[in-house]
Length: 486
Ligand SMILES: Cc1cc2nc3c(=O)[nH]c(=O)nc-3n(C[C@H](O)[C@H](O)[C@H](O)COP(=O)(O)OP(=O)(O)OC[C@H]3O[C@@H](n4cnc5c(N)ncnc54)[C@H](O)[C@@H]3O)c2cc1C
Image 1 (cartoon, rainbow, N blue to C red):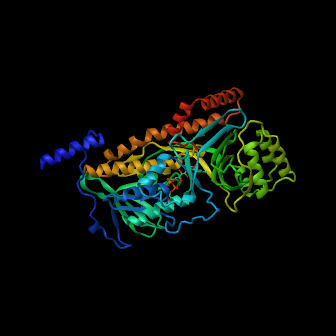
Image 2: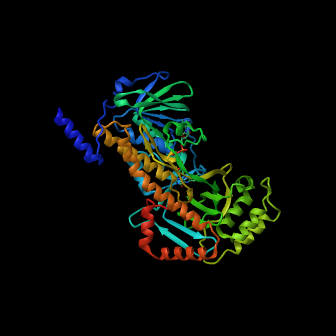
Image 3: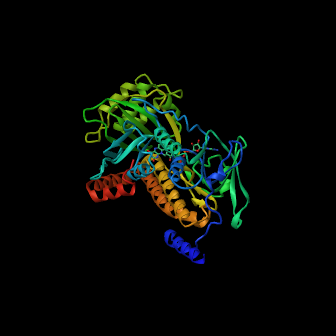
């Protein structure tokens, strides 16, 4: 018996690289002991609060383990509205190669219909007030730099893998009301108890938050987890919309991003006639651009991509407080486009915007001081949020889910207590530093391109041109960003 204990303990050290191997006092909860009625208290190994893409990705990754997993989601996971044909959701993400490899591993990628995922092979990035530009191409052997996927289709694909495996208990349309520490258990650790609004309770060995603790200073999530987060709100909103384009013979497989002093504007391909817009704008402009008439909106977006910075500033000053445009708005915009600088990248011309597809979101930078505490792990936007200029937020969150699932599975292998901080610290170690490095780079790029200071503009343009001419440096940038930088 002692021999077995010793062997397990040594394995724990080698597999997890830990100095202290913590042995669990109880095995993962036995399935036959777990049958619950809807109203009874539910007991599980891992409880995931928040069934957004990151929470459902973690649940899917754990659905092949022997663990009892509960997923709690306030919204309706069984009726996620999906789009058909050439109408697209305004919330899309650019998924990197590493994210797609993980989605394939958990069988979620196949469920995304081929025609709802758009690979892009080239990416053009340029400076609106300097002359610098850089072009990225898909690395040799890779089909694309990244794929654009609608968030609702991705989430629906993840839910369908979950329901197929029948391994996860989904608390659908269930809102968490409070979280407390339960009575002390084996080894002196109380398991978290989650109470839903309808009175049901869920008790688990490990609680994973995949929902943002954004319920203000008195956040229940933060109060329970006692994990502080640092960061700030950018003085910007992310305006999204689905745009109609003039189709071209060359097809639409390029992502475009132009850095304006007020923030970047990006065009992500969907099909030959549609692209998705992500435009970082000052907050006071958001309601005006959301209600600007369609034709005027299409024209101002064209100017933002191809016109001069003073022309764009002039046009925005021509929008009334009610979102109406001045009489000459369209003519002024077209005039500005005709004067577009020679040699600048030429993104597709925008002719319209899909009905009701305009929306805006506050942009912020946040990072939690740690991603884990005893019995608690934070993943996705619950752990961090970044500016969308590099299209990395969801990719980082999915990488968190993959990493936490691996740590949990390694814990099962060596018989460790899944909620023990010594196990969960492995997850923080795996993700914290690399997320922070990415967050710092994204924030620095935003700041570098947010200035109109002459010497800085000259230097950054020079830097872009030099980088553009050096293949190996571009490859390193692509690798750092998981083979995608939008
Ligand atoms: C404009 C914009 C563009 C972006 N573009 C990209 C991109 O191209 N690529 C990229 O990688 N990332 C992008 N991002 C970031 C990405 O959208 C987010 O990082 C990602 O959606 C976060 O997913 P999540 O599952 O962690 O959180 P969320 O999507 O916020 O999910 C949290 C879930 O928790 C649920 N919930 C909340 N409270 C409760 C409660 N009390 N009880 C139960 N459930 C609850 C919610 O209903 C929700 O479903 C972009 C972000 C913005 C704003």
